[in-house]
Every structure is written in structure tokens, then in C-alpha cells.
Length: 128
Image (cartoon, rainbow, N blue to C red; front, side, top):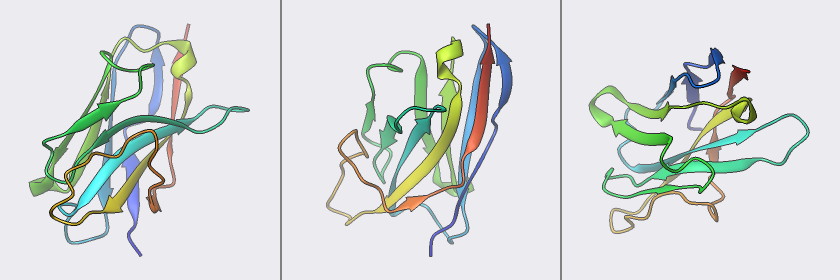
């Protein structure tokens, strides 16, 4: 069982920035496409950003494109979500997700993905 652990959440003022990190209990994340989802209280879970196993392809939801950036550092077993210009409506629990990929499959996780592995989530609260 792949265990994913998020960190970096917290309280920030509107307009501020946070960087979320995701790591794994596995020896490496290198073979996994990784993504970030969020779920606000009373709302459906929402895809935010995905990155291919190679890091060569990314995909963003329109709601965060231009404000959020996903990246990965496989040497450190970390995937990041840099979040800038945060808004109160970004308040949610943020989840790291991953899917094992065939080496020939260079697709990032996207809004149609149903990733198999999920972290426990980290709370992000943006105050107005």
C-alpha cells in the first residue's frame, strides 16, 4: 500500500502564498503520476493540478491555472503545489494523489483521473 503524506497547509491571508508538499512511504515516487485535489466543506472534491511521472507534462484546472504550480523533485521524493494569490474560496482540505504509470504513459493526472492512492489531506484556510 502506497502511503502519501501532505504537509505545508495552514492559515494565510488573502493574497498570500503557501507551498504544499507531498511525500511517500515508498522507496520512490518516480513511477507515479501525481496530482492534487481539494474538498471544501459541503462541496464536491475538485481536481486542481496533475503532473506526469517524468515531470514533463502538467495539467491544471481552470480555477487555479496561473496561480498554482505543480512540480516534483524525485531525488527528494517530493511533489509540490505552489499556491499564489490565494483567495478565501481556496479554503479546503488539500489531498495529494498518485497513480502508478507504465513508462510509456506520459500523461499527467487530470480532471478525469480517478487516482488510486490518496493522502490524508492538509487543511488550507485563507482569511479575508
